[in-house]
Length: 107
Image (cartoon, rainbow, N blue to C red):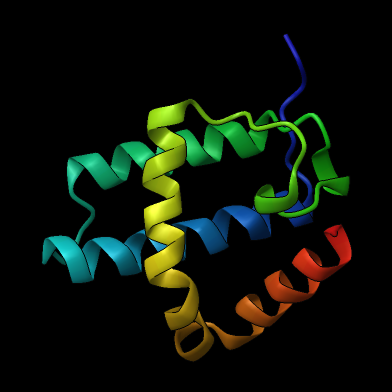
C-alpha cells in the first residue's frame, strides 16, 4: 500500500478543505456540527489528500490531470468549493490567497 502523505502542505490542504466544508454545511444544512453527509465528504477528501500521488508537490485539484475523486464526490466537492470559495476570502483570507496563487502557478 502507498505511504500516506503527511507533510505540511498536505496538512494545510486538509485544513482548508475542512474549513470550506464546515462553512458550506453551516450555511446550507444549518447545524453547528457537520451533518453526516458533509462529515463523509470531509473524510473522503482527507483520504484522497493523504494518498495523492503528487504528495507535497501537488498543485490545486482544479488543475490536476489526475482526477482521483469518484464522480459523486467530485460533484459534491465542486458545490462546496463554488459556495465556500468566495466566502473564504473573508473567513480565511491568507488560506484563500495562498490557494489562488497556487492555482495560478499550477496552470
